[in-house]
Image (cartoon, rainbow, N blue to C red; front, top):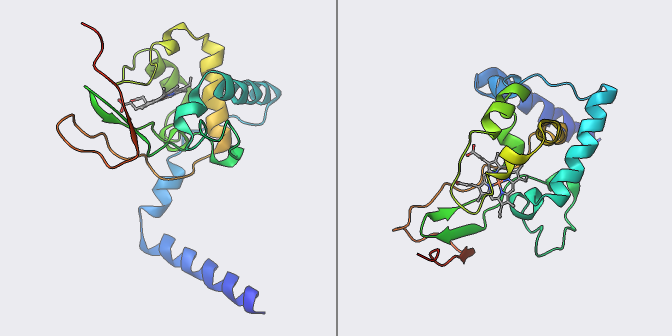
Length: 174
Ligand code: HEC
Protein backbone atom coordinates (compact mmCIF):
# COMPACT_ATOMS: atom_id res chain seq x y z
CA UNK A 1 0.00 0.00 0.00
CA UNK A 2 2.71 2.37 1.16
CA UNK A 3 4.78 1.40 -1.91
CA UNK A 4 1.90 1.87 -4.30
CA UNK A 5 1.38 5.31 -2.86
CA UNK A 6 5.05 6.17 -3.22
CA UNK A 7 5.13 4.99 -6.81
CA UNK A 8 2.02 6.98 -7.64
CA UNK A 9 3.50 10.06 -6.03
CA UNK A 10 6.71 9.59 -8.06
CA UNK A 11 4.74 9.23 -11.29
CA UNK A 12 2.78 12.38 -10.53
CA UNK A 13 6.00 14.22 -9.69
CA UNK A 14 7.63 13.13 -12.96
CA UNK A 15 4.55 14.05 -14.99
CA UNK A 16 4.49 17.45 -13.28
CA UNK A 17 8.20 17.99 -13.94
CA UNK A 18 7.74 17.22 -17.63
CA UNK A 19 4.73 19.50 -17.85
CA UNK A 20 6.42 22.38 -16.01
CA UNK A 21 9.88 22.16 -17.44
CA UNK A 22 10.11 22.35 -21.23
CA UNK A 23 13.80 21.35 -21.03
CA UNK A 24 12.97 17.92 -19.56
CA UNK A 25 11.50 16.55 -22.79
CA UNK A 26 13.88 17.95 -25.45
CA UNK A 27 16.82 16.46 -23.51
CA UNK A 28 15.33 13.01 -24.10
CA UNK A 29 13.98 13.50 -27.60
CA UNK A 30 17.24 15.04 -28.83
CA UNK A 31 18.94 11.62 -28.88
CA UNK A 32 19.98 10.84 -32.44
CA UNK A 33 18.22 7.87 -34.06
CA UNK A 34 20.14 4.63 -33.99
CA UNK A 35 19.45 1.01 -34.93
CA UNK A 36 20.20 -1.22 -31.96
CA UNK A 37 18.09 -4.25 -32.82
CA UNK A 38 18.99 -5.58 -36.28
CA UNK A 39 21.39 -8.56 -36.47
CA UNK A 40 24.07 -6.22 -37.88
CA UNK A 41 23.55 -3.80 -34.96
CA UNK A 42 23.84 -6.65 -32.44
CA UNK A 43 27.16 -7.74 -33.95
CA UNK A 44 28.46 -4.17 -33.77
CA UNK A 45 27.32 -3.83 -30.15
CA UNK A 46 29.21 -6.99 -29.13
CA UNK A 47 32.32 -5.79 -30.92
CA UNK A 48 31.99 -2.36 -29.27
CA UNK A 49 31.84 -3.99 -25.82
CA UNK A 50 34.99 -5.94 -26.68
CA UNK A 51 36.77 -2.80 -27.92
CA UNK A 52 35.78 -0.78 -24.82
CA UNK A 53 37.50 -3.50 -22.77
CA UNK A 54 40.62 -4.10 -24.80
CA UNK A 55 41.41 -0.72 -26.35
CA UNK A 56 41.61 1.23 -23.10
CA UNK A 57 38.39 3.30 -23.25
CA UNK A 58 37.17 1.85 -19.95
CA UNK A 59 40.57 2.37 -18.32
CA UNK A 60 40.09 6.12 -18.38
CA UNK A 61 36.41 6.75 -19.14
CA UNK A 62 35.03 4.44 -16.43
CA UNK A 63 35.55 5.55 -12.83
CA UNK A 64 37.65 3.09 -10.76
CA UNK A 65 38.11 0.69 -13.69
CA UNK A 66 41.92 0.67 -13.33
CA UNK A 67 42.15 0.31 -9.53
CA UNK A 68 39.37 -2.32 -9.58
CA UNK A 69 41.12 -4.30 -12.35
CA UNK A 70 38.03 -4.01 -14.53
CA UNK A 71 35.55 -5.22 -11.90
CA UNK A 72 33.04 -2.41 -12.44
CA UNK A 73 29.43 -3.26 -13.41
CA UNK A 74 28.79 -2.75 -17.12
CA UNK A 75 25.91 -0.36 -16.38
CA UNK A 76 28.50 2.13 -15.07
CA UNK A 77 30.92 1.83 -17.99
CA UNK A 78 32.02 4.91 -19.93
CA UNK A 79 30.19 7.41 -17.71
CA UNK A 80 33.39 9.47 -17.40
CA UNK A 81 35.62 10.10 -14.40
CA UNK A 82 36.35 12.90 -11.97
CA UNK A 83 39.93 11.66 -11.59
CA UNK A 84 42.11 14.41 -13.06
CA UNK A 85 45.09 14.14 -15.39
CA UNK A 86 47.37 17.09 -14.63
CA UNK A 87 50.30 18.18 -16.75
CA UNK A 88 51.66 21.19 -18.67
CA UNK A 89 48.29 21.23 -20.51
CA UNK A 90 46.30 21.81 -17.32
CA UNK A 91 44.01 19.14 -15.82
CA UNK A 92 41.72 17.07 -18.02
CA UNK A 93 38.95 14.61 -17.20
CA UNK A 94 37.79 11.66 -19.28
CA UNK A 95 34.42 12.75 -20.64
CA UNK A 96 31.14 10.95 -20.01
CA UNK A 97 30.81 9.11 -23.32
CA UNK A 98 27.29 7.91 -22.46
CA UNK A 99 26.12 11.55 -22.61
CA UNK A 100 28.58 12.64 -25.31
CA UNK A 101 27.26 10.19 -27.94
CA UNK A 102 23.54 10.82 -27.32
CA UNK A 103 22.87 13.78 -29.63
CA UNK A 104 25.34 12.59 -32.30
CA UNK A 105 24.36 10.51 -35.32
CA UNK A 106 26.64 7.67 -36.34
CA UNK A 107 27.78 9.63 -39.41
CA UNK A 108 28.58 12.67 -37.29
CA UNK A 109 30.64 10.47 -34.98
CA UNK A 110 32.53 8.87 -37.89
CA UNK A 111 33.50 12.32 -39.18
CA UNK A 112 34.30 13.71 -35.76
CA UNK A 113 36.37 10.72 -34.65
CA UNK A 114 38.95 11.18 -37.40
CA UNK A 115 39.25 14.95 -37.04
CA UNK A 116 39.11 15.45 -33.27
CA UNK A 117 42.22 16.36 -31.34
CA UNK A 118 42.16 16.58 -27.54
CA UNK A 119 44.55 17.42 -24.74
CA UNK A 120 46.45 14.51 -23.11
CA UNK A 121 46.17 11.76 -22.07
CA UNK A 122 43.35 10.90 -24.54
CA UNK A 123 45.00 8.90 -27.36
CA UNK A 124 42.95 10.72 -30.03
CA UNK A 125 45.24 9.63 -32.87
CA UNK A 126 44.16 5.97 -32.54
CA UNK A 127 40.80 6.88 -34.09
CA UNK A 128 42.62 7.71 -37.34
CA UNK A 129 44.04 4.17 -37.42
CA UNK A 130 40.84 2.40 -36.42
CA UNK A 131 38.79 0.56 -39.02
CA UNK A 132 35.55 2.34 -39.77
CA UNK A 133 33.55 -0.65 -38.54
CA UNK A 134 35.35 -0.48 -35.20
CA UNK A 135 34.47 3.20 -34.86
CA UNK A 136 30.87 2.28 -35.67
CA UNK A 137 31.01 -0.53 -33.11
CA UNK A 138 32.17 1.84 -30.37
CA UNK A 139 29.33 4.22 -31.24
CA UNK A 140 26.63 1.53 -31.31
CA UNK A 141 27.83 0.02 -28.06
CA UNK A 142 27.77 3.35 -26.24
CA UNK A 143 24.30 4.14 -27.60
CA UNK A 144 23.20 0.63 -26.58
CA UNK A 145 24.35 1.36 -22.99
CA UNK A 146 22.25 4.53 -23.10
CA UNK A 147 22.62 7.85 -21.29
CA UNK A 148 23.78 7.70 -17.65
CA UNK A 149 25.76 9.59 -15.04
CA UNK A 150 26.84 13.20 -14.80
CA UNK A 151 29.13 15.19 -17.09
CA UNK A 152 32.80 14.92 -16.06
CA UNK A 153 34.32 17.97 -14.31
CA UNK A 154 35.30 20.86 -16.55
CA UNK A 155 38.88 21.25 -17.77
CA UNK A 156 41.12 23.19 -15.36
CA UNK A 157 43.78 25.50 -16.89
CA UNK A 158 47.49 25.03 -15.94
CA UNK A 159 47.64 27.97 -13.51
CA UNK A 160 44.64 26.73 -11.48
CA UNK A 161 44.74 24.14 -8.71
CA UNK A 162 42.45 21.15 -9.47
CA UNK A 163 40.51 19.30 -6.81
CA UNK A 164 42.16 15.97 -5.84
CA UNK A 165 42.43 13.18 -6.77
CA UNK A 166 44.60 13.64 -9.84
CA UNK A 167 47.77 12.21 -11.38
CA UNK A 168 50.61 14.56 -12.32
CA UNK A 169 52.56 14.13 -15.54
CA UNK A 170 56.01 15.67 -16.01
CA UNK A 171 56.62 17.95 -19.01
CA UNK A 172 57.69 15.96 -22.09
CA UNK A 173 61.44 15.88 -22.87
CA UNK A 174 62.67 18.78 -25.02
C1 HEC B 1 44.65 7.44 -20.94
C2 HEC B 1 43.27 7.83 -20.72
C3 HEC B 1 42.27 7.71 -21.87
C4 HEC B 1 42.05 6.63 -22.71
C5 HEC B 1 42.80 5.30 -22.75
C6 HEC B 1 40.94 7.00 -23.56
N1 HEC B 1 40.52 8.28 -23.26
FE1 HEC B 1 39.10 9.34 -24.26
N2 HEC B 1 39.56 11.00 -23.16
C7 HEC B 1 40.42 11.04 -22.08
C8 HEC B 1 40.46 12.38 -21.55
C9 HEC B 1 41.26 12.84 -20.34
C10 HEC B 1 39.63 13.16 -22.37
C11 HEC B 1 39.37 14.68 -22.25
C12 HEC B 1 40.44 15.40 -23.07
C13 HEC B 1 40.36 16.91 -23.01
O1 HEC B 1 39.73 17.45 -22.09
O2 HEC B 1 40.93 17.59 -23.90
C14 HEC B 1 39.07 12.26 -23.36
C15 HEC B 1 38.19 12.64 -24.35
C16 HEC B 1 37.53 11.77 -25.20
C17 HEC B 1 36.53 12.13 -26.15
C18 HEC B 1 36.01 13.55 -26.40
C19 HEC B 1 36.65 14.11 -27.63
C20 HEC B 1 36.16 15.50 -27.94
O3 HEC B 1 35.29 15.64 -28.80
O4 HEC B 1 36.63 16.45 -27.27
C21 HEC B 1 36.11 10.97 -26.76
C22 HEC B 1 35.04 10.84 -27.85
C23 HEC B 1 36.85 9.90 -26.20
N3 HEC B 1 37.72 10.41 -25.26
C24 HEC B 1 36.68 8.57 -26.54
C25 HEC B 1 37.53 7.52 -26.14
C26 HEC B 1 37.43 6.16 -26.61
C27 HEC B 1 36.34 5.64 -27.53
C28 HEC B 1 38.48 5.48 -26.07
C29 HEC B 1 38.88 4.05 -26.32
C30 HEC B 1 39.25 3.74 -27.69
C31 HEC B 1 39.22 6.44 -25.24
N4 HEC B 1 38.60 7.65 -25.30
C32 HEC B 1 40.37 6.15 -24.51
C33 HEC B 1 41.17 9.97 -21.60
C34 HEC B 1 41.30 8.74 -22.24
